Amino acid sequence: MRKNCLLILRIVLYSAIIFTIGVIFWRIIAPNGKVAYVWTPDYQADEIKKLGPNERFAIDGQAGVMRGSPIYFNVRAYRPFNSLTVSIKYKNIDQSPIIETGILVDSVLKNYQLKPLTNTLLDDLVNRNSWNKLEKGKIILLQRKKIYATIEDFLAKPPAGTKIASYNYNWPAQTKLKDYQSPKKILLSGNNLVGAWQAYIYFKNEAANVKIKYYSNSVDLSEVKLLIRDANGKIVETVSAKALNKDQLGANNQQEINLKTNKLIEGLYKIEWQASRNIVAKTIECNSSKFSFISRLELLDQINPIKLWLKSSNVALQTVNPKALQTVRLGGLNLKVEDVYTQYSQAVLCRDRACPLTLTRGGLEVAGHGVIAFSPEAIVAADITPIDYWFKTDKIDYIIANYEPSASDGEWQLAKNSFDLAGIKKNKGYYEVMINVPEMANNNSSGLQISEIKVELEGVSLKQAILNLFK
Image (cartoon, helix red, strand yellow):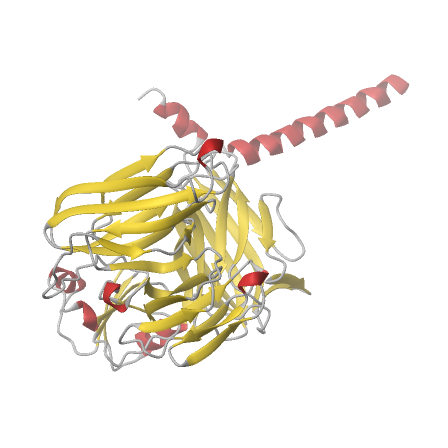
């Protein structure tokens, strides 16, 4: 009898061990090529980590409440996958016009590929009978007056860019400047810029020559890279420098990197400076007088006043340094930066021209839906208007968007986005996902309520992977 009991106990224990190993194997290997993880206020899958920061997100009863933007979470991927789909069930308490999700595609530049969950501004325009609507898959073209019969006709012979607005659509920059004269050399910035940034630069049938002097205050294990892209995003030229050693540190040990190209056709190009936050760009020199930072830049803390110029629908300021708290002057308005780790936003009223932004000192990250420059003459940007929180249709005749409206489940909204993982690197086995509600004031919002987040990863099945070995 005792032997039978021991035998049964062993069978149960071995079965439990085999079952546990099988579950772990299934979760890690995902033999069918698919795996899904779920977060709810009552249950958090181990593979979904760090939903926060806590200052912006907290669980309140049967929902997580987002009161500041953006928030982030990490998704564990035990093996390679081809796509990641994020589904969210939410209540838009504040009736925020734009809600997005994104995935981190470049940890150095801190670039996120963002896609819309909902855009009530666009929903309203789509539902108006006064605008002609054309659709092809998820692509929507709205026309104030029907001029084009198909979306293909519009793309083949588009109107002037100043008449077009776009959302979640990759429209090539086709800006051409009249009477532009190229300088031999110009100092674009003598200010200290922290970390990575991107900028528009204009060339007129000439070779590019961009020189950056930089330094680091700590040993940086990553290399510095400077590259230029054409209007279609294709890399034209890249230069890189090796990591600095301990004998090359400090502002007195400046390094230099120089990017040169062959003759470029006239048009707008994009410069990318890829560097960690340990790297400070001291000066930028180039043979173009048109050089505007795209969306954001971060200024090293310094006690001297700094004047910037914006062509943007808004400006958003924040700092991690208590010494950098200050009141800035935006056009004729004052904007106070009163707390660290808090974003302060303001609409830019002079949207049709360069608007001055005066800082009493450095130490701020300056961002906006547009471009930033160190002089009004340096302003240059793509001529397509983005659909953002401050979008107005009064000067727009065409709207093109890659967008699919969200669905409803009673009082909750359901929406999802899928991301191609090709070329996206994991960080210590995780993908970083963002939920973004533009212009949501930190800690001063009724909130976006989230009752469920579901993440689905899909890739090659184990069977297909084995068959691929014999091809």
